[in-house]
Length: 180
Image (cartoon, rainbow, N blue to C red; front, side, top):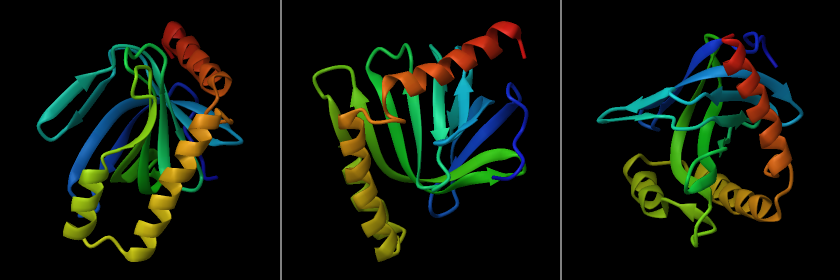
């Protein structure tokens, strides 16, 4: 692991698409790291923006950035509909002291309503993998990863258990309350 900022350091998590076009930019703070990877968080009021859309975090969330660089898993403490949202990705890592990644369209979601746990945006995945020419080995790897992550979320194994996320959401709350 390369040098990381001090916990509480503000940063931007910058996403792009496979073709290099800009995607989401999330205002975050660095929370720290554990055996699962690095964690960043958004306190209530943090902004996220992409071309044509902006959003403000209504409640706290914490995002795991694993060393594999193949996904980012966000845990939403107070979201009314979604507890876990995993962006299947490529090249998630650190550049210039901030997290970056390529959004690869597929998402694994643990919804709090009747939808339950599911893989989302398969239509976008099918469209973009053809339009952007995703390499076949990456397509195969990420399709299998989505299935594997769906199974891990269903089994609630760490880091997709509640205790792991609640710990990091607690770190975010401490940082936010101290104004660090």
